[in-house]
Image 1: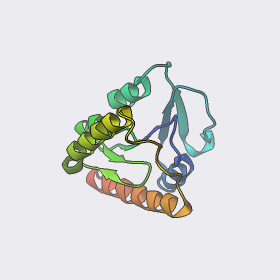
Image 2: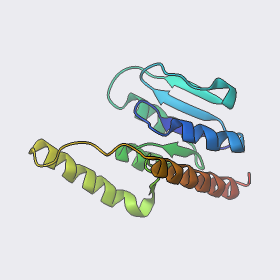
Image 3: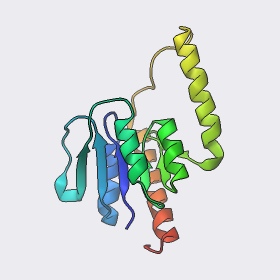
Length: 153
């Protein structure tokens, strides 16, 4: 059975993920450095990892299997999960793919350089209802694709 992994500490679309996962009866692992509420009655498990940079990312990358779905805004983690055969969806509803990940890593590095030089500031805008709906729709599509590809749909 495929599983959904959430890079949980700053994920703004956990509730949308729980809604999609419950429709398909899929388990969800929320991986985080700090304790947070997860709805256990929906097959959601909180995986607490130690504090530290990339500890949650490392746990996800080491435990993901081909066909699993990973929710993250972290581009290097997305690259690692794609290499492991997972489908990866950003928190804005944009799918990470083998074809796009190289350009996304390069853009991330350029933006980091611009931030360090003081030429770029601020973070992403908050997600609106339209963004959340687009995310849930794309997650549903990825789950369906994975289930079909792995003979579970």
